[in-house]
Amino acid sequence: MQIRALPLFCLSAGFVALASLAFIQKPATVKAATTPAVYTPTYTAAGDLIPPLDYRNWVYLTTGFNMSYTPKTASDGSPMQMFDNVFVNPEAYRSFLETGTWPDKTVMVLEGREAASKGSINKSGNFQSGGVMGLEIHVRDEKRFPGKWAFFDVESETRATLFPQTANCYSCHAEHAAVDTTFVQFYPTLLPIAQKKNTLSPRYLKDVADDSAK
Amino acid sequence: MQIRALPLFCLSAGFVALASLAFIQKPATVKAATTPAVYTPTYTAAGDLIPPLDYRNWVYLTTGFNMSYTPKTASDGSPMQMFDNVFVNPEAYRSFLETGTWPDKTVMVLEGREAASKGSINKSGNFQSGGVMGLEIHVRDEKRFPGKWAFFDVESETRATLFPQTANCYSCHAEHAAVDTTFVQFYPTLLPIAQKKNTLSPRYLKDVADDSAK
Image 1 (cartoon, rainbow over the protein chains, first blue to last red):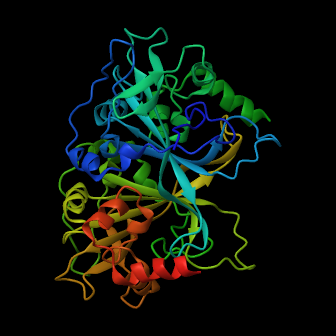
Image 2: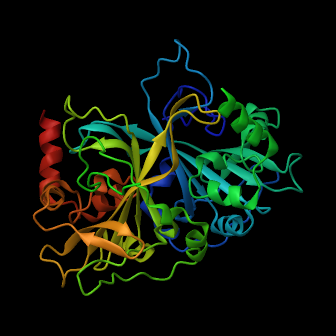
Image 3: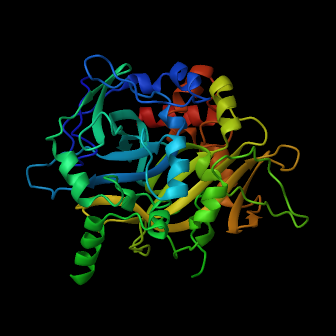
């Protein structure tokens, strides 16, 4: 089955197709990942990122359900529903707790999971079923990337390809993200820390003020 | 604000009120929890469980959205929406990966989080906002509990009260849960392991067979 979902970090309305990142499901992979080593972003000569496969052992930040940053249109019509789970490497998380912002080499993983409604004894609402619909990575590597951060799309166990700096995700995160181009406003355990440490971006604070004035 | 949500592990339609387990949000608590020690279930003389406060540093299993095991009725009508996040202690998780089932002293935490829709740049779908709506714990302690497991409701930073063995959660989990009274059918990374290790309960396999025959 073809690996493809619309960019997750650029959350757009609708999902075009189901991804089958089957390697995430392999028990062997999960097993190997139970004592996570420190992950440092590593790249191929072609500029691809070698993805962290043990991110499910990292620190969990949040989950969204069918989130979209663009208005739905009549043509969307996709019946597909999706959860997106966000994880961050533990070293970066610990640093955030101390400082209210992210250190260099922070790696965040956004995992799209198929949402099911019918199954077992569930009568309403949605649960996460087997399929991984997409996997994206947001990396802070300030010497490597013009805006310090870059987004990657995981294509296989060994390769995540760079989203070009012209992709919408970069401008949207720069304009609206609460802390250093990351959507801390959606991470309920971290937002209070950023508030306390005064690390919320001026643009985000303006968004909040504009919303309050409506 | 009053702490109260309908039992989460007994997921029933609707939520009666917002909980305010504010201590989960305190940066100091989160900070203290960054290098989690091994947690062993500990009880007061009165039989209350002393809850693990660093469960957000444990292994994440899944998230549901507005899940319910009972049909909705016209009288539910609650506008409140909720995510439920499930975490397990890392030692138990590692054991599950090896065996396909849970060791004694397994501790699972189910955290209900308020779901918001309007906020920041989100246009549709739901994200987790600040509030913890409820916190329940499922503990395997075979020498202590008649059915080996027990459910607890977290009331404060130092106290989780036991659900009586007559509560619906016990019978429902015994009848429908995929592995050893736990809903592994909703944990997408663990279900394949239970399948491979042949640890799915006969009752769950009968449920699956009955569903397929419909």
